[in-house]
Amino acid sequence: MFGFFREENALVCDGVPLDAVAREHGTPLYVYSAESIRRAYRELDEAFGAYPHRIHYALKANSSFAIARLLHRSGSGADANSIGEVEVAMRAGFAASDIVFSGVGKSPDEIERAVQLGLKAINAESAGELERIDRAAQAHGVRARVAVRVNPDIDAGTHPHISTGLHTNKFGVPLEHAGELYRRMSTQPGLEPVGIHVHLGSQIISTEPIHRAAVVVVRFARELRDQGIHLDHIDVGGGLGISYDGSRVPTAAEYAAAVLAIVKPSGLAVAMEPGRYIVGAAGVLLARVVDLKPAAAGHQFAVLDAGMTELMRPALYGSFHRIEPVTPRQARELCYDIVGPVCETTDALGHDRRLPALEVGDLLAIRDAGAYGSAMSSNYNRRPLPAEVLVDAGNATLVRRRQTIDDMLALELGGS
Ligand SMILES: Cc1ncc(COP(=O)(O)O)c(C=O)c1O
Image (cartoon, rainbow, N blue to C red):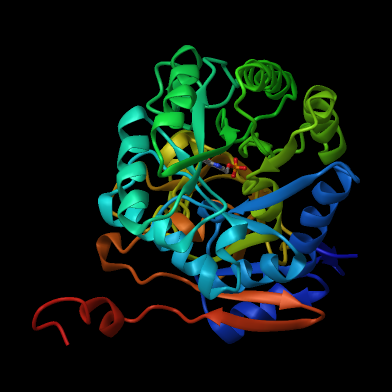
């Protein structure tokens, strides 16, 4: 068994009791299962079989260094959404030729660095950005490999805040304008078109929009080929969802089948940028109850020592995470609103949760917090970033220590 499961009533990570990990390292604490990450990566990789493909793990989901390194050692490439993520990827061992660089507003410095490094592809977001990449590449006497991020105006059926493939979203270039950009590249000596990029959004729970996007993009690649523009790959982005509430979501095999059915006849390699699928279920956030008090309608407030500063998703998108006592008491169930300590009404992790009666000091696990958890944490209310533990082969290792007030103030004039 691997991942998070119960042994004699107590929640464990890859067999290591979470109670003990929390006692040793304190809370709030992220705990990750290395084996879950490796298996999710392998499952997706195997689903594409022998067809030419490359997984570029989307660091935005979780760029903690230990996780970046683990994925590099597992054989993954990387997808970076800022030059900061590119630098982390390089320090974690990824070669420049294995990094794709996405992102809607690349600064001049980011473009300059990306061009110098010679990344596998810069996924360009606009005509203006292509021009800026061209100029930077010419200044260095190189050709930058680029893919245009096309916006196919397809509704991925996700939460509106994480949809990116509609014309009303800020991302990419409308498909009908993209042909002109590829043709123009023949007059831009700093650019080498190598692919087409599309990313519809995150937490996609049906293969149907993915299939539709593949159809559109492959048709476009064929049109380009007919015009003498030959590409290496189609980058289908990320977005494959996970089940936060136990409902059915597409498997890696179903996802691969949907993509390959369309891309295979083109002969183009597949690049993909999954984040959540690889790390989402592989992490929990551990937090302790610091206060209990009655709420309206017979509910109780359980106030935790973690909230939106550690896990912003519920406050940001109203997302659902299962919340479980690490060692449930034998007690009658009560209905809880589980909230954080931050001075914001939206700082809640779950509403209307029926749990065996809690006591102050109890340890709770917020499940499926591996993606967009730690990566989105903040110092709001001067709360230190949480510590992180990676469990691998029965060993629980502190991979990020808890931030201190000194760490925070070190950046500020007169602070240290
Ligand atoms: C360009 C790009 N690629 C990949 C991803 C990863 O998405 P996910 O974690 O849903 O797989 C994102 C996130 O939305 C993204 O913006």
